[in-house]
Length: 198
Length: 184
Image (cartoon, rainbow over all chains, first blue to last red; front, side):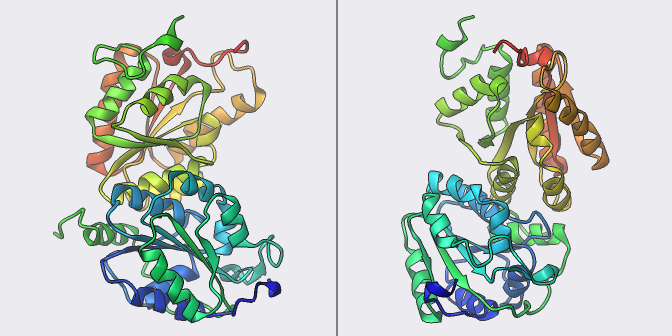
């Protein structure tokens, strides 16, 4: 990973910058664990969905939302360990080419939430190369925070799915998501305009 | 059998099992159908692709398809997934951590391998894991063996899944579909 010429950033900082760019009730799917915690800590929004398990499914869930609501931008936050669980999803997304889907990969090379063990791909696999090889041409490493913000802005008006990978440190997530799955889903559906509040 | 020359989109009077499944999906406004292929489902998949009402595509793994239709449901679009028995066997985690706790009406059509003339030992053992998994999660499931019961079971099960926000598995038995035989 050292030859990637990318700064090691902080997940909460990067997540907060991302949320700061959202202006049109974009949907955001948090993966399990720390991406979820930082999404929550960056400020709860009704358009946020928080996973409680199903490791690796943040991108497929986001794809489903994107197919259901093609006029809304849909973002998903995934860790490198989670993405390794479901690499095939990248080729599915590349084949369908949903123009409103933005994938963010937070890569620290470890299973942070289980005790920071290295992933089987730590230091050898290049997430962006894998994404590009899966058919997602619009994939890039963020060089630093400013570059990340620039890539997010470009992705917001892109006409094909985008993947942005960020090297992050091993700092734990900030905050903890409340864990009531039905409440999470109902709020998300309200946020997407699918349900009326009771 | 002239199934190869059959019309791409079944007519309203099509009484084949796959024609009934397609029309039942359509009537219930289920337009998103990701799948992992199965030989027995070939004509259903082909006809779904040929009908512009449906967005249908292959996924690399069944779990992925569950994630996709779950996201679509939350976004206001109905979906169903197609798979075979061995694919269902990969789903225990996602059923227990996504579909059931979030109360998502996940509609699954499972082509049943591993029974009534199965020739692959791996398939026959995997089949025996399916109903215990469904039962352990208290998931509604029906095994469909008769053409005359298919529409009733599929239509009512879909409506129940949607109104009770609970997953359902519709197991398509070889008595209905003809199954897969060793010489195919």
